[in-house]
Image (tube, rainbow, N blue to C red; front, top):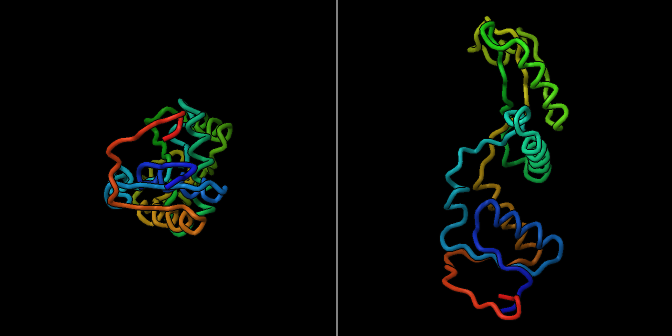
Length: 178
């Protein structure tokens, strides 16, 4: 069997790579040793980050999160629940941090919207009525199993070969090729 690309692992990364490369015309083979999404991808907490939590200290990661969040919402909206995220400030918190967070989000491309106290309490009645400020960001919840399956289906439809329960036990490299 001769292929352009060998992808080892059928989780979110492997399935996404197989989809992307197959859609670009590469002849791919994806091998997964167990069930698809059985490792880290199937054991994650399912949070789709907006990037806001990184905006102040790690703007590059914030920008990457915002970009990937937008891509996933475009190509796999059926895997995402738009839960949103809130950053809430109380009287005892640093009064200037909300302004820093808003500036950092905007400069990193992370969507952020300030809610009035009433809007925040209407959306989340369990919040403290003592809140000073509330910022809403585009966090969400993602179903990794549906995402992996959708990526694998797209990869197969584009011509990739996708096999599970196939362990890679060794490789022979000759002339820079496996």
